[in-house]
Image (cartoon, rainbow, N blue to C red; front, side, top):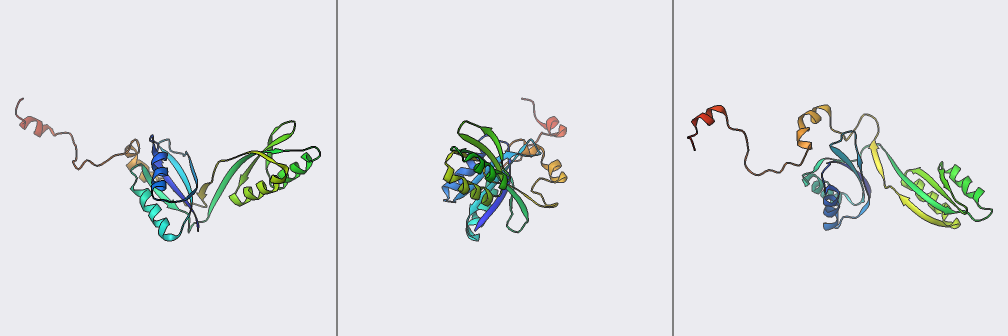
Length: 200
């Protein structure tokens, strides 16, 4: 079963490698993994597409929450959400065929972003199934090059994965860098403790 998972992560070096390594080490199959900026400069959003049963999915969620740089994890399984993928496709336009390709672009609501002597570059966005269908329609003409961003997603309505104002206020300093527990609580000594400390 296909699942869309969003994770808020701290903007720290190596976070993407850490998360990808966790999936790889445990044999989880990722269909898509996208990382991008959010409204908070201290955080990035990861959108992960996995095909897995409930048991594997629960393992994925638990492993993600154990990573110190992961702030929040949300599975969109029970939520209505919007998802988008974007593709750039360079397709051959043999003599007499360019008009046909342009008609397909219009039908799928794409747009031409570059024109060559014998090629067109098309930009198209939408759900994965729409882009997959468009690609298949273009294959007979000859796809020269294709690049896709991967899926991004956001829940509909008022639901959000972003930190609330209360969360933001209470965790702002903690988002600056991961805090690992050392087993000891470090604090500044009080004035009374300083005065009671023997010289030297």
